[in-house]
Length: 421
Image 1 (spheres, rainbow, N blue to C red):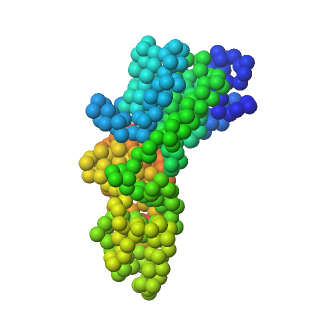
Image 2: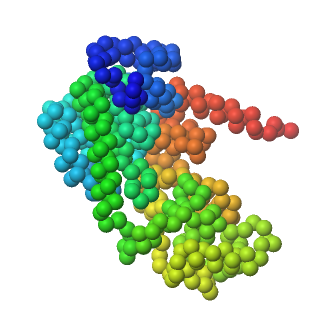
């Protein structure tokens, strides 16, 4: 195939291809082997779906309803480009009896619009706003797979992992934050077999790029008073956005800015030494040199001394997760958590903050008992060996794959536990 992301070769017989895919899907769900004609992107997605414990008869769950959905959509960055999506895709969807759908970075559908009768049919499989269509929830599908692999992708008929979606064809492309490059979600077109054409994939990809361009042109969404923004979750080197300028910080400067952003009243040199260094032999001269270098990186007027402090408040992704946890917005907190805080840092204060934030979120996830949120956590690099969350997932979604993984972890823990004397 000339383009592995397109579902059908030019001139291929759709009906025969559907029959082949159904046989391949049956072979995989019964024995775990993927026959060769299945595209690699689909085969990989089927394997991820199976590892996540998704069954072929699964159904999407609706996670956000009414007021919660409205509030979440209003705050989401993609709300700013919904008029563009409607202008470029809305008429195409309505005239072609298709659907325009937009999801967030976790595969949660935010908007589903289009032809009325097609929407009614989609409602029966919970392809509705607020429903979770991540791969970890419903397996292979265009919006969920697009955000999982961060690529435009087309999914045709029985390439879908769950059977009730196999009469449909869809194409989706991820949309990125033009400032950070992070995936914000995906734009999708869903309908019949007529969408199994290279043009539909190219179309949604062009729409996604147009959305990114418009987001870049719009006034940046900054906190009140144009506060600087610090991104430190899931990365060893933090990124600071200040005055429209993105600054990639060194590891030590990342630690310093995380700590100073949490202490607007300032920290003394001795306090920073204790917070940053396990080695008590590190001298104040070393710290002052680091702070002098940080001051040059930030530019004039942002960092003062006696005590060391930032002259303006700095918003951070850490603070966003903390606020959402404090208000009980667990889903929103999980969406904002892109990984452990400065994962390679050994600075004592950073380690304590990293552990406190992760423990707070995982405790909230366990208490919430939402199988999709739990599945998202255990299928991340930082959560794949989290026994307590796997146990909670096994209680909420006791599939064979989940139970097997839990048993394997329990065996590992037993093997590592020292024998009683």
